[in-house]
Length: 481
Image (cartoon, rainbow, N blue to C red):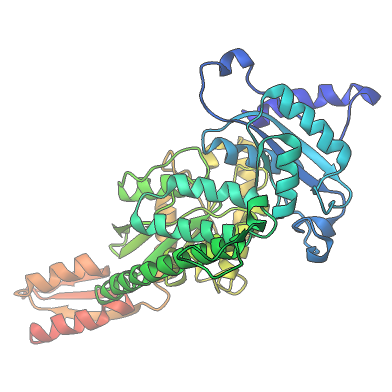
């Protein structure tokens, strides 16, 4: 695994003194003898680390720099970028952290590093270089020509992963929309053929229409067609939501950083068979299941796509039809990998995406429930510390292991508590003859107290969810009560 290799080799590299470059970290990969039987593309992963925070989010142009500090460590970014590459079955032959003082307009990284990487690409027979940062079309063109290899930036890589994961028609449409929007913005100076002038003999375009204008128009036509198809998707989802409101069961949406264990939790509590792998973006298409809590309350649980740092804006926009399940949810479960050393940074990334969706994460204490997952991976002292921290957390997180099932009863109780803030407590007297009404109450309400008199009539103290009060009144009226 990348992290283990880095831990084993890092101290040795540091001990080499002046002979080693302390800023450059390498993760040794497979030997060539192991690669001879593989047909996978050989990839090199580069993680630019800017010495000044003001360059962190800049797409290689100082005019576009945003003063946003990087909350993730270089080592974690390296491990995550490598994981992203391996998620589409690339053979990552090496991974490097590249320190940068300031972005270069032509290549992002300095000329000396560009030449070093050129030699490494040739030596390792690299087919694809992944730059874990936004790069401009012009930079991509220069780097590809210099290195004689295909170059992908972070957004392009994530789009490739999403494209390989989408299974439903809706998911495929949303990924294609994001991909085309990304491509359209990169037509300028991307390829030399786009500078040709097209004659007027063809069916499309008038005399002298530039090839770039034709390509852009073709992309826009396809984008418009996809958006029309997605209108039907949005309409269908809205009909489904309207149907669920009539049921009505509250919707609980699971969100979290990619690979936090969302799908494992979903499968554990619902008995579903959603793909759950130790892999980024294992889940793309949303899944919903009805679930009965320990209290008897029924909910609709929704599993959604994982979030990630610097999630491309185009993807958030394209997947808005899917993410509206989160926006419309009565309760959001924010699943965190509490055993990950970057759990706090990952939580901030998730909150940022939720904020982009219009969800107020600061004052949403009753709307968001944090679920600290993977406690089975914590050492006893760290688990004790996490439990102590949880007791002092204002939002009262649930500590669980989706793999072992530990803590799931507490999670069920906390979900019920959050959803039950507006529940009503009623005292009812049910005649002995109304067995059907009694059965309905036990099925749909929380019976707190029960007493039976000599005639067989039952006095109940029940807690009823607000959304079910109308149905209870209708049932009572039908029974003549």
